[in-house]
Image 1: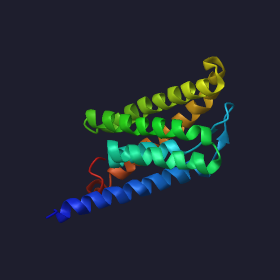
Image 2: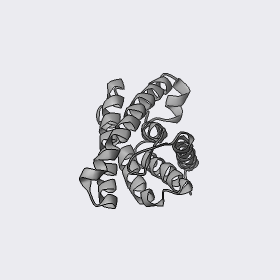
Image 3: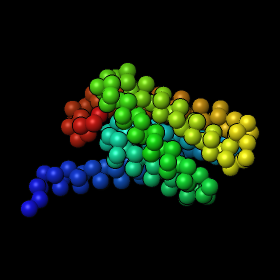
Image 4: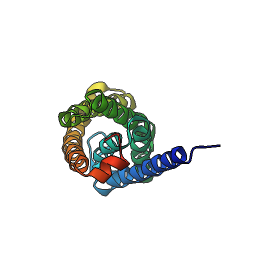
Length: 176
């Protein structure tokens, strides 16, 4: 016999993961500013990071990977789908791990986001370098990824701090 509470918690986690994945897809698609390397800047990192804080590592990584990868697929950026799946999942895993390792202190949101975004910038630089056959040429995409990172850090931190202040949100999202 299964425990109804465990089934309910797993169902809620899956539904929230799907919701965060959908939100990260939409946030990635809403504003797209082309970058010099053929990719684009977007607001998706905000939701990827927020999903990591709300859902924890595994579910946050799934949501953070699936949503932006779907956005790349929908947008016709097929070459970036594999990289996005891996990079965004690793971003969410790293952000959640650092946040929890620091006992969910408010300042750790900035540290976790900064480290995760550094991983994103490095990941796309390496991937663009592989696509172009030149790491030096791929440096052209780094500034736009840094702008996207700064926005993701600021927005996800502000949203996470605001959501932490709401008791029902903390009850629904114990990882926050």
